[in-house]
Length: 159
Image 1 (cartoon, one colour):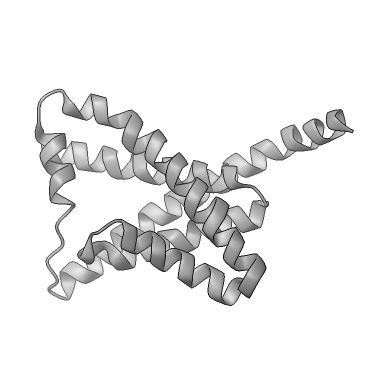
Image 2: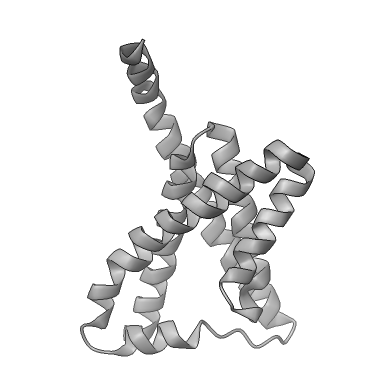
């Protein structure tokens, strides 16, 4: 029985990774689009000042990479999709679970200009989790998203 479950899981792994990478890139594209629309409408869009300050320090970026690209996505996905989204989905259904878990995800980032971006990304990560029936897809999506955002931030700062 365990062997069959392991075989099913390994057969599903490429799909989970593909969905995760696709959702992560889609989330990054959505956040860039939302940022451009907000800037066009005259809203000041500044990245999280504390993060930009840390990334600006020589040598700090390398030390932050594991935290931003691995630890934070894993911890956030375990709570927001692994616990909160699933809890809400089971108790009150998807119509409440998707927006409420995404709203909580956006609020915990304490970044008012980014609320819409985090909300949309939270919806996408929840969709990846639900679509693949595994938290792994949401984790991969979050890792890809944070990695892309960090890469662009570093290129912009070093630019």
